[in-house]
Length: 519
Image 1 (cartoon, rainbow, N blue to C red):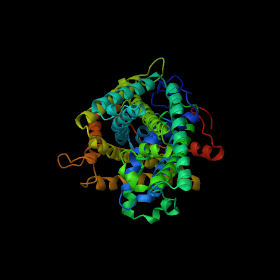
Image 2 (cartoon, rainbow, N blue to C red):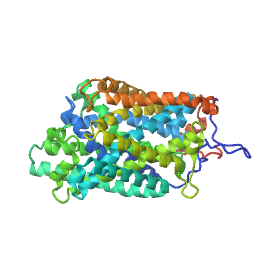
Image 3 (tube, helix red, strand yellow):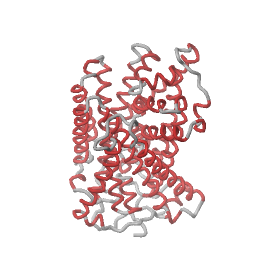
Image 4 (cartoon, helix red, strand yellow):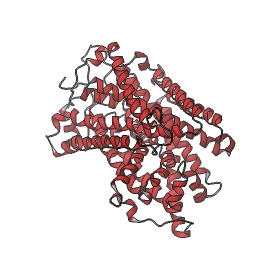
C-alpha cells in the first residue's frame, strides 16, 4: 500500500491496529508522565552503579569516561528523533513493531517486536537482583544480601509487586514512577554537589580536579572509545518506554515523541555530571576496583553514615522503577502484535476496569520470574548474569537501528520538500540507525573474544553471543513458525508512507491533526 490511513470508514468493523482502538485507557497520561516513564526506564542510578566502573576500566578510557558518555549519547539522540517523527504519524503502542511492519514488511516488523520482548526479558533478572540486594542492604541485612536463596526470593517479590502495579492501571504506575524518579534525581544531584565541594574544599585521598580533557573524545584511541561506547549504550537504553504508552497519553502524537528526545538530553546531563564527580572524588582506580557497584562505596565516603543510605535507596528505587517500566512497554508491544493478528489473540486481552493488557502483563511478569530464578539458581556467582547484560545490547542495537531506518522510509515522499524534512525525518534517524548497526557489529567482534566476558564459553560460543545473537536467531525461527498460523498478517501489503500533511503541519504550527480531523 502506498499510504497508510489511520481512520476507519463510518460503519466499518473496528480496526484494532489503529492507534486508540486497542482498548487502552485514553488521555490517562500527560507529557510529564511520558517524560518520567522515559527517564525512569533507563534506571540512571542503577545503570551508573553497575556500569561506570567497567567503563573506566576499559584500557585507554580511564578519566575520559565523560567523553564516552557523550559519544554514546549521539546515536541514542539520533534514533530518538526517529521515534519522535514516527510517533507523529503513527502513535501505536507497538512502536518499532508497528513502524517497521509498515515500512519494511510484516516479517521484519515481527522480528523487531520480538527483539523488544527479548531485551526486556533479559534485563529483568539484573534489575530484580539489584532491587533485592539493595533492599537487604538498606535494612542492614548483610547476611541475607550474600545469600543466593534470599536474593532469589527478594527478586521474585519485586517482580511480582511491579507486575501487580502495572496490572492495576497506567495512572498508578505513573504516580509511583514520578515519586521514585524524583527521589532518584534528587539524590544523584546531591551526591554530585557534595562530592565536588569536598574535592575542591577538602582534597580527599586520591581526589583529582576536573580537567577539560575528560570530556574530549579525541583524546581517546578509536579502539578504546568503541569499547567504552559498547558499555555506554546500555546505560542510555530504555527511554523508548515513554513512547510505548502513547495510546494512553493526552497528546499521543506529540507528547511521547517529544519526551523521548528530551529524556535523552536529561540523561546525558545526569551521566556526565555524576561520572565527573565520581571519578574526581576518588579517582578511576577506586571505581574500577568497585566496578560491580560504584555508588554504594562512594556514598559511604561522600555522605558518611547514616546519609550514605540515600544512595542505597537511590539505586534501589532506580532498579525497582525500571523493573516496572520494563514490564509496561513489553506488555504493550505484545498487545499491539496481538491486535495486528501476528500472535495469539490472548495477548490482546484488556482488563475491563483497569484498561491494561492483562494477559501480556502477567505473562511478562511470569517469564521474568522464571528467567531470573533460573539465572540466579544455576549461577550463584552471577557471572552469566553479567554477560546477559552485554547480550541485550544486540537486541537493542537491532530494533533501535531499524527504527531509525524506518523513519526515512516512512517519510520518503516528503524528505526532499524541505531541508528540515531531509535532515530531521531522514538523515539524522538513518545515521543513528547505521551507527547502531556498526556498534552491534563491533560488539560481536568484542564479545566473541575470550577474556572480554565474565563466564566461560558454552559449546565454544561466548555467553553474550549465545544469548544475544542466539536470541535474535530464535526470533527468526519463531517468526517462520508463526507464519502459517497468521497468514493475514504475514501477507499484508506494506511499503507504507506517512501522510504528507503530518510534516507540513508540524513545521508550520508544531501541531499534528488528530485522526479524522481536517488538515
